[in-house]
Length: 227
Ligand code: CTP
Ligand code: CA
Image (cartoon, protein in one colour):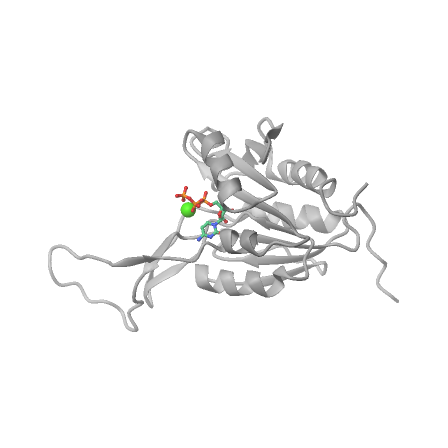
């Protein structure tokens, strides 16, 4: 039996979603990461697939396993550099890319090949900047709709709008991770969505599944060729 053609507002569209927190190795048993659970990205991947898209999910470290769905192709990565390579590899042919992942800004300059031994009373780890994936995508954007996230603890709007401009995004999703009910690890989120002209949609406390649906419904209307 032939697979049924996908229906829905994203039918025939390729959507890339990134999720989770990158893992930057210090040595074989230690790393630097962050509190991202991957839940927002997974919700976006599921919602995009349900709307008919062909989805690629680039997932770093996440609390749960990625969704298992024939319509969602999962690429597992660890570091910001691996995420950069995976994402730039699928960027050219996609219609929409949503960067929900929390990417490390710095990584250890050297990952030690074997487990570090303790010695002195203090230790210094030298870190160097990672590539800004979203900024790279923004600078090479063609037809793709590019959507960033900005997790902030206060002053969300100003930071989010500055990031949208700097990274040449079409939309940016600001969440104040300092507010109860919003952000890392939870099943709910409180977000505001901005474009270059300002606030587009301010959502109340909602499940991440509902936030994903609302964001995608708004994004669909901004795809080239949408009526
Ligand atoms: N991002 C990225 N590559 C990085 C850092 C961030 O692609 N090396 C993306 C994130 O996936 C997110 C957006 O940029 O979609 C905003 O990330 P955020 O950490 O809020 O912004 P930064 O530019 O890193 O600024 P800062 O951490 O100083 O607030
Ligand atoms: Ca950052």
